[in-house]
Length: 132
Image (cartoon, rainbow, N blue to C red; front, top):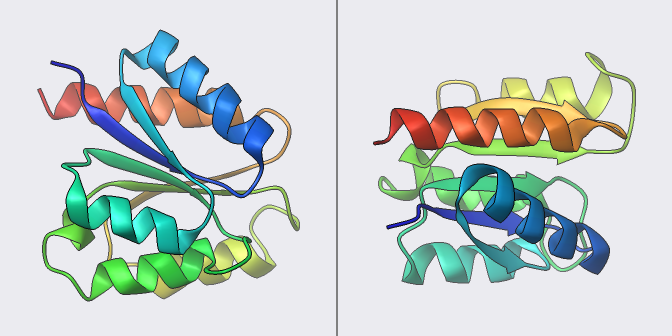
């Protein structure tokens, strides 16, 4: 039975790409949401094995979704890969997000940029393999 990965991003093209790519590369069942609020609804209804979330989205950001995950003992155990196209690696938003959730959430990776799909795919494959 395939593992369930939740992919949260406000860009439809990103959701479609990652749904196809992670299904093909990782053998995962990918469920998508267009913002953190939809992501939380799915997290509370489905058994999710890993989450990939953008940080900057309308309605509810990825950071706000992760804050809500921290409050729930079950949800905070789910591995989270956060991604963004904004800023410079190691500074600003990525460092803030990493520091903000360190020790409070199972945030396993932070990626950015044009080739982040490769890093995300590798990390999701590692997570799903460890869970077998």
